[in-house]
Length: 240
Figure 1 (cartoon, rainbow, N blue to C red):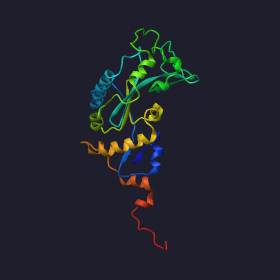
Figure 2: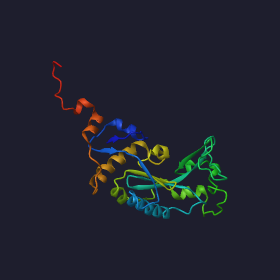
Figure 3: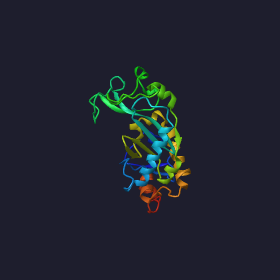
Figure 4: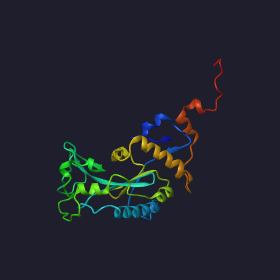
């Protein structure tokens, strides 16, 4: 698989084992809010809203007001928590009032399974703000165990309809082809497996969809192999 992108992700290094230029992955990023169905992304937004609703129904009862992240990857959707963590301790940050940006020493992270949560937080109910008092049937650790670390379902038709390999949904926004390393998705699928899954998905699923992915151009071929390999000049003779 040939990755055409202006950024690197955690599975890119696997391409060093061999590049198949007949399977191009044009990894272009875009983002938009999950609201207006009448705009240019209306059809996609409508599909994503339906996906989020259906995916949430497949999850166990939530521990309080828990901010979710959904990552779509090669036809499947995975769910985790998108929350703030104290960098020095790895514990959940207890937010007492509205803060649009995390304070110093606190970062926003994606937590995918029980290993990602500090043991002291297993018995907590996750409430973003102090004034949200409702609590689900499960504590945070229980919810993570019940949720599991695998995919919560398949939505291949959405991937095919919009020629998607990966996307993320959180904070009422959609991110097409996000940098999965920033979402700590390597905790879910390792680099070699992710590379192989993308290659098979593009060639076996998106390649036969009604709207196949864009074909490889001469410019892309030159970028992959160097100018000499795909140039129109005659090969060098013994005399140079």
